[in-house]
Amino acid sequence: MDKLELVFTVCALVGGTLFLIRLVLQLLGFDGDLSADHPGDVETSRTDASFKMLSLLGITAFLMMFGLGGRAMLESRPGQALPALVVALLAGGISLWLMAWLFKAMKKLQSNGAASLDQAVGLEGSVYLTIPANDVGKVQIAVNGRLNVLDARAAGGQTLWPP
Image (cartoon, rainbow, N blue to C red; front, side, top):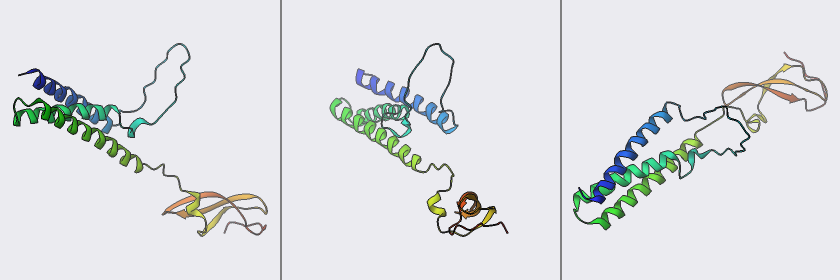
């Protein structure tokens, strides 16, 4: 085994192992924050890095595919290092981009479950708590098939009573 073949093999094994461990942990929900007590003050700014290009999962995917692509190219064309490096870099780059794209797409599927007030405008509902004149009460309204209790104000300055 020559040096380049060894580099590709190590990248494939290390990247593949770390990729699978990280993927399983993330799918099981163990990708959250860890907390610990420590002395002193630390100022950090929180960012959501789950959809950025250089995530831990993306880097391990790059290493895995870099190793596998380079190793496969060396197997099909022994002794040709340049094509193997090109294929390895392409395979790694594509996997890095694909992981970033997948997590960005999954991020778009996230919903906080709260009803948007824009969706409730103009819908019919019923008074839940009395709405005094020129004050706020509560109404029940179905938004997207879900019953919500929202603050409401009467439109003519009159008092509205529950049924």
